[in-house]
Amino acid sequence: MRIRRGCAWLLLVLASFGWTQQAAATSKAGQVEQVGQAPTHSKLKELLESKVTAEWEAFKKKDKKAYSDLLSDDFAAVEDDNQGMRTKSAASAEVDRSVVNNYHLFALTVIPLASNAALVTYELTLEFPPKAQVRFKRVLVSEVWIRQNGPWKERYYQETHVR
Image 1 (spheres, rainbow, N blue to C red):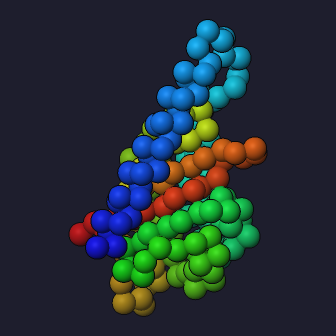
Image 2 (cartoon, rainbow, N blue to C red):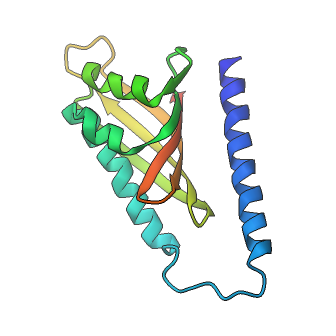
């Protein structure tokens, strides 16, 4: 049930970004967009990939401030541990308890949703300490990143366990 609510919420967020983009395009009809307003797709991918890497480096180094700085104030996360939705403060608190020794990102893709929003997906393999009960964990991750009056921030995180 929680997964359905999380998926439904993600679809609602993505749909609202689509409506926002359509309304903005309609209101700008006949206007010429200024060059340099939005990064190109390759630059956006490079930028968001560096932010995702910074996110996992913060977990690895237990740097709560660096991790928290990447999240929007209304951040929400759903992980595969059946603990429900997490807020920015709850997600940031997990950094202190992190036992991530290393991580490996694969197949990162960026799908621009609007000039100020993007969907980032990737596969992640987490490594835990040698004596940990679970040594490795693979998850598929979807993140929504937004830019509002400043730098890009992560707004939503959803992970699904890969067996």
